[in-house]
Image 1 (tube, rainbow, N blue to C red):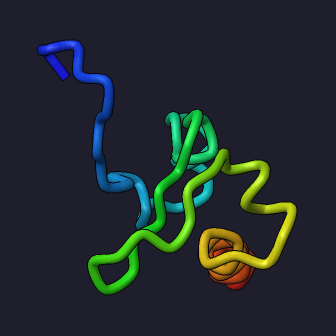
Image 2 (image 1 turned 30 degrees about the vertical axis):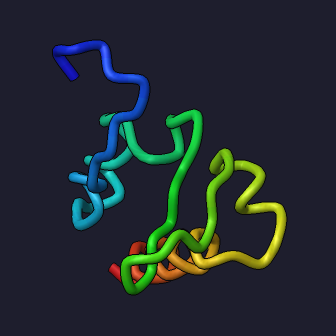
Length: 72
């Protein structure tokens, strides 16, 4: 980050926060691009909004989070 890297690889640090906290912190939905890796291989790479427009691993993760948030 400090070297002005062209690529920054980060884990979603807020993946397990509650929905109220999620609403006030930047999340993966605010990023330009999302890279989904499964078993060490690239599966999806696009903007969050485009990944949500079609069936995707990313979309499934977002839906699972929404379902868990609604259960609380």
